[in-house]
Length: 350
Image (cartoon, rainbow, N blue to C red):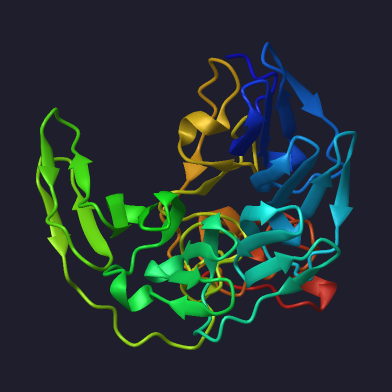
């Protein structure tokens, strides 16, 4: 299909086959009428990650910096979310019972305002939310986090998930047949019947029925193995990943620009400098070869500052000093504005 945009699209929802909304980078919202896609005015330049509605005239979109937008059938407008952190997913049972999940936790909309949810469980960073009803809601997230809401109380199911992989999506045919997927080929199944998983070949393997969460490790071969690994006691410290690249801020060599295993940033020299990417191909326009997507914590000069946020990515400068504030570090700037008679000491290359 022709979308009419080159922006990254990251969420989709529709009330019918002729009323579909897609959201993505830089505030992009595109609507499908059943015959063609057309851009909508969102009123924001923030990246949007998730979208859901109770009807075609009651739609919610969430994203970067705590952005929540609402569509009333005529136009989109901003809502006060109560957070400045990234929101990944949104789902609801009605127009007055909506949940949003993200880096800073879970938020609920009661029809008049959004408020943070107190789960009573250790804090996690969450990636998405889904439910079969307002009294049967699942939220999944980082390090195998899984929470369930029964309409009155939240239950922490993370210890039964059997994984420490980040979980990115969840869906079910009912509250007793729920699937969650995540990093490293992780697939989790909750409830009956037993999970049947197809590998990359034509053969299938059936995992024995279990009464709790089943973890399935999917590899490139036809082998599918359940695991009964139990998570260690969960810390009460929130896992924050500000740039949503799969690397917690505490371990990220560039916490404010994506450079993780699955999400990176287009480097200088690319056609789309600064945009998020999955591969070099995401950083080019047309048939150009000017594309470099920095992934996997790349640090060319080994100064513990990732290339995507290093002001001298090929010259070691742990302090990142930039005397003349021109974006180039002292150690690689031909006219750094320091040294000599300036009275300002330049950082020395390590």
